[in-house]
Image (cartoon, rainbow, N blue to C red):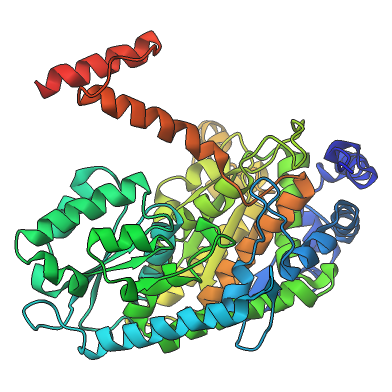
Length: 548
């Protein structure tokens, strides 16, 4: 039976009435009125601490949001996902990225197949292979150990490995350099090939089907480059595959023994836990990769078993719904105050926007309500000197997720206290703002004349009352990074259930691919011009003229 539209849900309508009052609340007053607000509105799970007290809500708001979650079946759908039900309704697939990080013996059967056994069989092969490369036992065609690893993928097969390897750079083997190529733009691959030696480079070709256009274009170009130095017989020493298409892998010149499998119940943007994480295991070692999986599993267990009221992913998801659907916030800014998390926002962009950037319900009915906001941001303190001006004084209210690490992995004095001071100060400044009276007092203390004070006061006033979450971890380790990623995965799930959409397909990426294939054939003269619009025809004509 189709689920009623979200806007017709009684809990949603109750929240609309509640918002009529809550929208006028001031965060300063909420803190003044409740000295225990921070303690009440914070939670710890799987090595992460979430402070959500700087949000425009109270305990009544939260209880109403929890009622909405239950009314929409968040707990029921959560249990269905973990049980292996085929909740990806448009592709008739289970959604079991959580099974990729479950420990051995955590049996789960799908279509009479023990997937826990299958997962750990692949992990054992990853362990063996990554250990050989890291020890220097895996040799290139001239007998030298591998020094450079080039991951060629696109989407989740690129964003996941790159983000994790950069985040865990302090754990990377000192002999190994990691490179990531995704863009069909040849400048991407060209820049990478100019930095590596064919004798000591290992290419990881990550494509489930081994026909992904961008990935195979780059893979074939890398193969051609390599064959300018080595022979076809040398390819198996320098190319491995993460795929399920053994026939195409073999035709490429890769030994099927060096093909690492994953399954159709693993979505691309949820695949870092699978063999797509091969580059991570090569970089940081299988032991640390196992800790990464264990951190995610710890968050899985929390999400699966904690009551909704004490459930970190549920809280994060519901707070997002509160701003998106009641305050009309169109975007969320992610601000990691750790340089090694400089790819984390890009990773979340795909995770959230490809999952929940939908306007059709699971039953195919059009939605009449806003869904996924735009995800954007940069590492602090860089963002403070770029877009924070808009966050503080712009016309839109944009919630912020601050992410900070309490203990640095470097020994440089003063840097980390300055970093944390900036992170905490920004969240306080968003919440407090600065009133006109406070600005006037400050300017008067500078002995400025009244006319100057009058002129400057509007420009130096900050409205404040701008919401934020702050996520803290003691240290950036494989385990805490795993928990952090899993937290946002489950947040996406919660919001998808609330909005009534399928978070696990991505049909929106297909149309452009089809059109691009046709246009490419026109650009190289293999087909006659199609019936494009005038703009597209004109662009094609100019490109063909430039190529003559």
